[in-house]
Length: 94
Length: 94
Image (tube, rainbow over all chains, first blue to last red; front, side, top):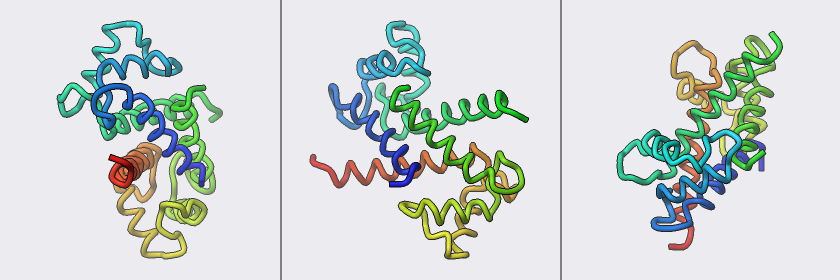
């Protein structure tokens, strides 16, 4: 596998790990989103903060069905990756 | 680093590796896109096919400046990841 394929596989893998907890295994419930935010603290806000989980749910749930499906998740990961890239470009050497 | 952070870092890394070849190091020229398509053959169409490179350039270059910047690239990677996920879900056990 190329590096890009590996990265794509990892994103699919992370989503599946958390989405498989309860309810529909193809989407994140609010409870599953909270667990994801607790376990992936590096860049997401703290899952122990209830307001942060509620806000994240509102931000991610584009179609308003109270769950986060993979498309909604990957759009968010892309936006986050783009923000990280922008940060590195600005912080890096000119 | 969490798995999600690692995946995001890999996407940034792949883009930087190919975008750094010629011209603006923050965007892919058509020549750099061709090299990326040749080296990452697993899921992209073959870079040796000139029409495929031209078509990919038109598809990716959302703002029409004849280069592919990181935002354009990451949106494409997200769409591709989503397509892969859909395939795995349909192919996997019910």
